[in-house]
Image (cartoon, rainbow over all chains, first blue to last red; front, side, top):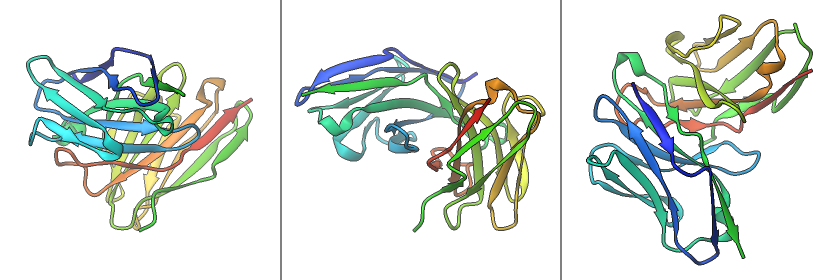
Length: 116
Length: 115
């Protein structure tokens, strides 16, 4: 069965410092992995996705994530945080196949706080 | 290209009532998925529709139902509302959702409050 664990419910960084949001996944097959961001009272926006091409994935707004199969991890990083990065971040897994269509499995989310 | 739209954005209902939420996908997208977001349970998959057929269903009671029209617009219905149904309901659309990495595009959600 698929599952996602976000290791930190809350992360606080200072503006201009690096961001690291940690995610471990469990999947029976080769998964697709995503990071989504949700700003207050807004819908979800895709930051980046991994689909078995390059293990280092670059996304929007300077975010990137590295797929490590041996560690079953997909951590999200950004070299320098900006105040506008403050939001809720979700690590998401999906599997292909007729029994899994349209279904994303979400982690519990990590709230990123950026201090001036 | 217009994004996913959901109506209404906010709803207040009382226990026992029923409610219908609407979702218009991105033009050309044929798959629509619905999710419930609550502080306690997080984001949970409700169901997915493709070409007017429910292809996948999450672990929710039968009070939660949906349908999809020929233009891919989708509605979800919750009957006999309970306090615990208070949540943000998100709709997402994608091209086909059978291939790996098929990205889902989310609407802004409908905030349902049950009193």
